[in-house]
Image (cartoon, rainbow over all chains, first blue to last red):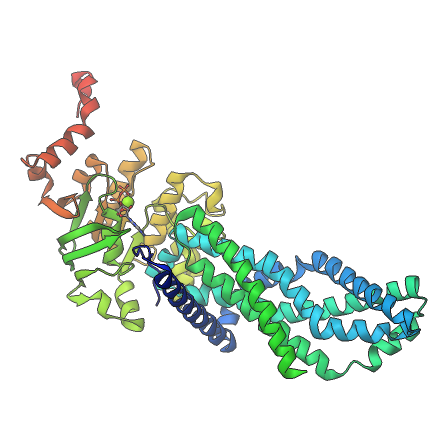
Length: 270
Length: 253
Ligand SMILES: Nc1ncnc2c1ncn2[C@@H]1O[C@H](COP(=O)(O)OP(=O)(O)OP(=O)(O)O)[C@@H](O)[C@H]1O
Ligand SMILES: [Mg+2]
């Protein structure tokens, strides 16, 4: 059982002290965030808690999956269209515009699909998670859970993680499909590539590996978003100001981690 | 039963508890009074292990709560029910679900049994008709009472009340006081009540403790507490009943 007491320290005396304090705090937060994440992952993978809280898991799944569908669809459509237009105009100079399908499908499945989905989810769902948990923390609700010996990680983080772990990859597949269709639209209207040619090109060079790497990313992003947002929420202090801070931090940190870890997954798996 | 031994705690760079010692015997009700911000809520939080003392010990039936973890801590916490100052209801659950929460999560009781137990507790605090409402849709006093129902739903041996009657009208306040008394008389509950309301304090308390500057400056049964020569106590009592002088003599009480 973890209890979050605010810590009050004297302000650091010089630059080195400030840097050291910053480093230590970052390490501490990383450690605590990871421990919450792994605990929630443990509860999720043991299945029984998920079944016990199935109503809440479904509710969270609805919030992060179904409710973000419209914005995801829009973003995915335009991502595919931009990719096709951008690449198509260059390819046309070489008379190779028929290759645009390959480019769009590869880029969507491996990079842009998971990446865009993660950005949307961290901005909409992650920030909401952080704000909700932070409000609960500063209004003593988490303390009340502790007194009832209800584990907040099992009760609050686990359902969110379970929902996110399913919904993030699912939404990513959706984003990929919509993005590729958006590319097809642009290829047909702007580049004179017939849908069949586009489709054949898109599928011919798309291997299982690309799809799996994309899904691996999506899964990893779901851990990042839930872990960061829930940790920020549960460690909030200081009333309404603290809720704002937790929300802001959760989005910024999730964005950065999604970007950086996304690069490394591409680097090592592709 | 429940004891704080020489507890020190610094919060926000300021000592809040400075050598606090308190003792509640089994089946007794201890009332804690004191000025706002003196550390009454902090004292309660130490009793359930939500805060760790910088120095000193918190003993529950002789066991140091801070030296326990996991299952041991859970066994101790199972003896407790706590009403938070803000009610601390889970805001996305209805009043009914909030009160049912400890039963759902921590007991093997079935749905029908839980419904019956929860409705009984809601009736005790006069909320039987508001079970379906969300915390955002009920008044402050109703939140308090819902929090109270949740605190006692598992029939705990020790109940901590943080200002159970603040925000309630005088009639409801006396109802809650009677509820606290009933729990003590019928179920032998040990209670700690934090309050600003001296009538309530004298009604439910076996002992009344006055806090000042992070310490207990007076801890006496109500009858002796009112006669205390301590200037803080005198000032507190006078301030509470200042308006009584303007009532016609017959209505004074
Ligand atoms: N988590 C915290 N962080 C920093 N300071 C705190 C914290 N909790 C309480 N304090 C400080 O401790 C002091 C005592 O607070 P506490 O809530 O116990 O007061 P109280 O006696 O319950 O007052 P009230 O009657 O108004 O509820 C206050 O000065 C408060 O600022
Ligand atoms: Mg208080």
